[in-house]
Image 1: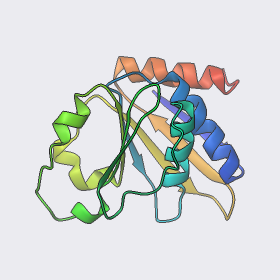
Image 2 (image 1 turned 30 degrees about the vertical axis):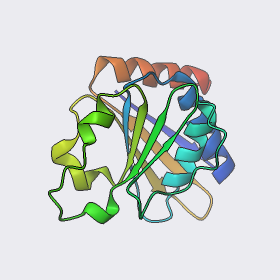
Image 3 (image 1 turned 60 degrees about the vertical axis):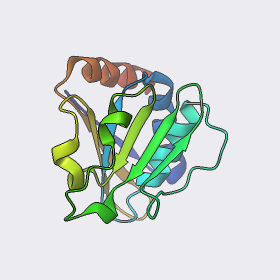
Image 4 (image 1 turned 90 degrees about the horizontal axis):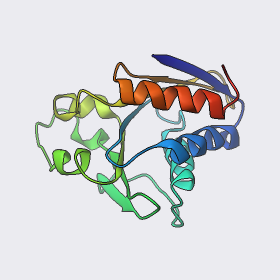
Length: 155
C-alpha cells in the first residue's frame, strides 16, 4: 500500500508526522529517505510530538542514535556516517525493542533492516513544499497507513 501527501511548509510536514506519531505502536520501524534538506529531522520532530516527547529532537548525525522518552520510547537513528560500513551496532535490539525506531538514510544499513517496516520518502518539490510517500507491503503497516489517511481526512 502506498499513500502520498503534499505538504506546503515545515509546519505541515511536522503536523503530518505528529498524526503518524499518535498511531504507531511499540516495535514499529520506520525508514526515512530524502535528499539533504528534505526535512527528515523535521519529520522526526513531528513524530516525537505525536509520541509525547518533551525534549528537543535534533539530528543524531555524529552519535548515530539518540533515544527520547514519550508514551513510547523513540529511537532516532541517522546512519549516514555508516555508508560503506558493514558494522552492526546492535540494530536488532532497537528493531525488536519496545520503542519506535526511525532511521534516516536507511539505505546504508539495508542488510540489517527488518523486512516488515514502514518506508517513508520525502521529495523536495520546491523551497516549502514536500511530497511525502508512505509505503509498506506488511499488513500491520498497511493498516497504519489507512489510519493515517483517515486522520489526514483522505479516503
